[in-house]
Image 1 (cartoon, rainbow, N blue to C red):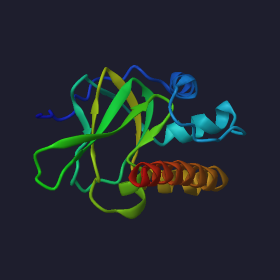
Image 2: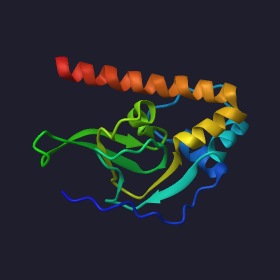
Image 3: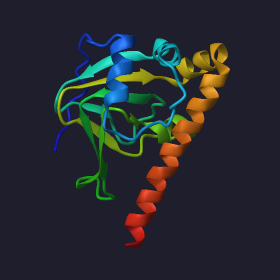
Image 4: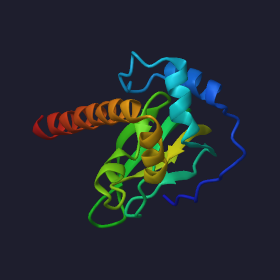
Length: 166
């Protein structure tokens, strides 16, 4: 399967519509239940909204990039290239309301998998520099976000471990 580079279209999201879409999504929750709309608006002020066309790649395995993506609309399939470099295996289907790219965001290593848009997607991209700026102006929110991201990372690791032992 060949993946095209992302088609970056003019996004249709605004901070307010991003909040509504993210909260309404069926994906894993960040468990930031105490966040008000104003808190989410602060977060999304430090992101860049992107549209990803069906079939386009958002994240490519092996690339050095530290952006985390908040999925606002659509579904992305996460696939992993095997050691032979040819075959692919589905790791997950990530839906609106969840995140992608947390491993490389935290550890600075190359992307561990590829993620492509199953259907038209909207995401809010946050680079490490944007996160640092968010943290300077909103240190309490940034700390809460890091713990929420850590919970999702831990949940995904536990699910992977469970699959490996079954």
